Image (cartoon, rainbow, N blue to C red; front, side, top):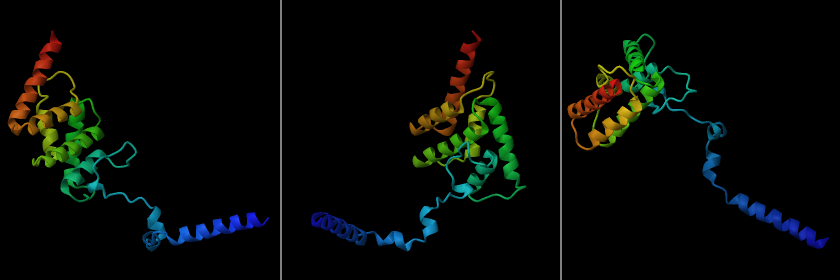
Length: 174
């Protein structure tokens, strides 16, 4: 019985010592904020998930403006029209087009090129003119980025994409 009592006391002593070695920084954080997951403001988010309850055009317009936009702001309506047009020419949904445009903006920024998501969508839309088939926005984003990373100017990269899409459209007619 004495051995059991000593074992129990040893466990209690070890627990007390371990408890005393805790990180005090956690106890300085208010309890509610230790467990809260804080979401970034709308305009700072880098990606919209399927579960996000925000329209892609509102998010993208706010992201591009660098601050939340109020209802009725003409930039929201302009972005909605742009994404609706893009959705008719690309395989992806407006949400995915918006996500890929913001992703491309960030990738280009990392190599010293500044282009807005709206510019990128418009430019990539221009490469599909005359094509009878929907294109993959994600694929065009990747090709455009690779061409720019290799040093092509914006104009040269877009011309290259136009020729590629035009060439594929001609092959599909045969």
